[in-house]
Amino acid sequence: MKSIFLADAHLKKPADENYRKLNNFLQNLPGDVENLFILGDFFDFWFGYRDVVFSAYVPILATLESLVQRGVKLYFIEGNHEIHLGPFFHYHLRTHSNPRELSISLSKRRLYLAHGDFLDDTQQRYRRWAAFIKSPVTRRVISLIPPDLASSTARR
Image: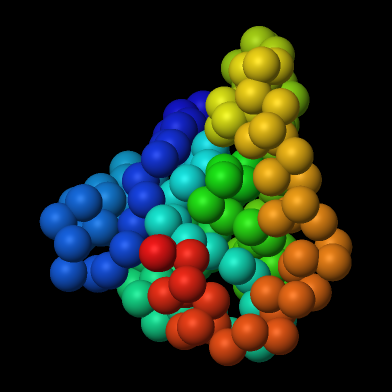
């Protein structure tokens, strides 16, 4: 069983070199890859709107979709740049996700997977900010903001 683990790609625009390289890498994964684990901050900013995705991410989302269609299981742990994966990941890509961590069995081993931003217990200020930004109330407010405005505001 082959698995791929990715973290901190911080994808922005399809024209960026790291975006192109990662998309090409994923498009050319060998056929025996069964699992793709994304351990946060895959995107520079992501919020899972109900009816739209960010146009800049359509190429990489299409690549993820093709992997899922060929049978690759997609696992995603939200990082501090993903506020809420939303319906596209859950329903369309059938993603196994968790906002903070996953505990899985893989090749007879038990693995604990996390983005890492919550591993340092001394970061109480960050934890309060993260709890606020990922709260249901904040998610609801962001869902009312047009995607382009939310994205440009997040990048400031």
